[in-house]
Image (cartoon, rainbow, N blue to C red; front, top):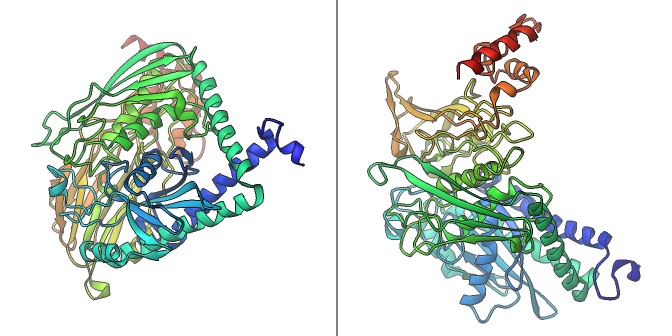
Length: 600
């Protein structure tokens, strides 16, 4: 077995390489399940807004199975900060890191890092990053879009602060969090879940070293990075040589950014070298609001848009990242932020636009490449709710809702993914359970349903968003949001249509209706409802080239009406949905499509 496992030069056999790669991914998945099963707040135990991962001792991203794209790249930057800030790291330590100026995504993502030692040598780091229900912001939300700087934002910032020594809590840090955070019991429950996750990862890594030995694991790390690099270069070599530029924009944010926030990317593909450069240096300077991107978000979401357009089984780690250069500028809104500019909303909004712009730029390489834009917007279904719970002695509550859904983008080979969420999530998070949400918090949902006739049309269409309505069950409820997509929809590519724009309305108990601001804070009185329409994804390719049978399926599923099928896709039917006799009238469809083409 020894000779089959490795060659004379120490390189592992393909079989052992695959086994060990899956063992490391299995550790990350076990860490993930530990978090999901033990987290206290709904944003963790229901929506799964967290990610786990492993980095090497020299701070290269190594394993991130099922991690959210917006979370994972920065883990290596965070462990590098831990090593830079501490010269006495040892076994039994744990560090709390949420500093967006030294590698984290944004302050709401608390990350626990445990350095893993074997026979006295630092070999790996295990990380658990989780979005918190509350972080001590000046407003009861973890997304403070209007914060002019980090001081107005108000979050407690921990730049790789030691919270355990010899596996015992540093109680001073725990007390700081419990004193400042509004829902201290929820935070501490989530802290314990994160701690269980990283200690589980540490234990499983020890078991791997016990079985395979340090030398073989060291060989595996080298081989796995080399394999990942080779896979990435192979994928890039299949792309055409080109430099493409694309612009997009976040919605206006009056009075902060009345013209919106421009997003610019320049992508250069060198297939001969197997390398890609993503240049973000032409973006605007840091803004006096909370929508600046951290360095981690600028890199992870630019590269996330690239990976979305490549083979899904290419490992996302330090090896594949060798093939991609992301050029950033210090002091840029999409780049490297200058302290004290706020990065409160760094993981969504502009990050969503960045992912969309990169993957849409790749569609400009030619037919069969790239993706349309996915539905964006942290609207009604992604708001932060807070107040007091009359069912539990008026105990305070704060929770990030993940109950909404935006539709996924159309691609060169398939329609958009219905359970997409937002681009930085790309379907990897769970939607809240209505039942668990209503049991956990004083909220009542009135409606959650997929929208009709909203999708970006195309040869492959975008997926629909949802219509959602909810309100408080007892006391007034504070709702804070920073929505995008109320003005600028998800765009189609290669002739595909755009998705719908979103909306948010407040319906008072007397039935009167007012439009909610896209960014702000409202109070919902008992009996009032916040109603929202979220975004569909853009389409890919000409809608008149869509298979008429697929249009028929959309009508039967309720995604499209018969009128929409006729007016947008040029598909004419006989029969009816009600008695299941709906069928494509082939001759009438050919004639209708010819008329639509002539009218363009």
